[in-house]
Length: 446
Ligand code: SF4
Ligand code: SF4
Image 1 (tube, rainbow, N blue to C red):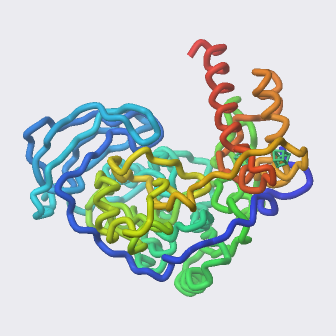
Image 2: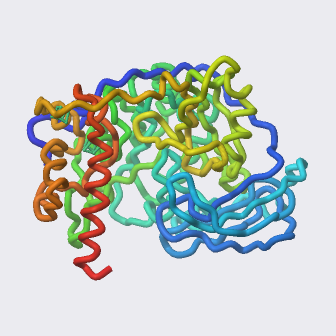
Image 3: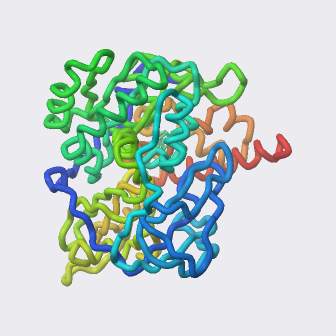
């Protein structure tokens, strides 16, 4: 798909806005209650294994993986189950959720003991028991990724290329020991000889630290990445770190995945979470999130129990500035995140940011007619032609959308960012991809 420029040279030069990078993680107070959805990952939702009135502790299994591509879910607080009922998620989908009233004691479930890992099979069992998914935002179950037998290179995604977000930066500065022990376990038990840690050049202290700590680790290297968004997009990262390209089509005829070019990508906080689990046996029950934006009183990095409501996170950060009118709540970063209709949604495993923007900062510019400048094409890291795809979508031209590979869009937002006419280009790409996939599934009888 790419013509001319490499993926790493495409993308957009976005402002970094990493004001919270130097702010150490603060544990937020235990909220009065949490709401933990059973769908915090790609794949089948977990099935609740608790009911109203049950007593739970921190680390108690409350949702069992609903299939091979799925993940276990654990309680982040000790307390009593208030309800198990369907809820509408912030992205509009509906899934079951477990609401728990916290008792404030944070009693750890005695079942949480370090797993015994001796080989690849027992490592994958441990990863499943940890409930680990891609914590950089994708939410793909980690055990499924690592099950492939074709991998020779573990690529650690420490790019953290989205503006504002600094959670991975803090993981590297505060938890380097568990990052290394997690990497060591994956390489050793999955028999992966090489590991490359990719870090964007705007984090020199992280690059220096990882260089010095991995100097004596055989097969492990650190790769400083260009400061061009989206360096952390899986295919871009693999190409920059290894020079390999994920094939568009796998040998089985399905879309290519990193394992098809011998790679697996793990987010740096994901691999560190594995390191912590192997040491303590405490599953994934908390998440560090960057809380920032011009409307929040005290920006920072917060360790939140999974299921804590945005409103409790906001309160833990001093609330909204009294002289500011809140315009928008964004979950995730400004490039790939989404707008939340209210503060009544819970922090999920894969959330890494909450941005509170004033009405002025959140105001969208008026879109103007396309001037056919081609900047969106130049910026797309997947080599797509957004301006042409928009036309194809307008005409509902399935064959043209297929020929122009709309399914490769990774929703990075670069095209919207660079558009001088302020057109909602990536939003149109998202609609086009959704329509295309629906048609494709319809034709396949799915
Ligand atoms: S949102 Fe999609 S079309 Fe736009 S730049 Fe990113 S990958 Fe390309
Ligand atoms: S960047 Fe905007 S104005 Fe330029 S071709 Fe793309 S959609 Fe049109």
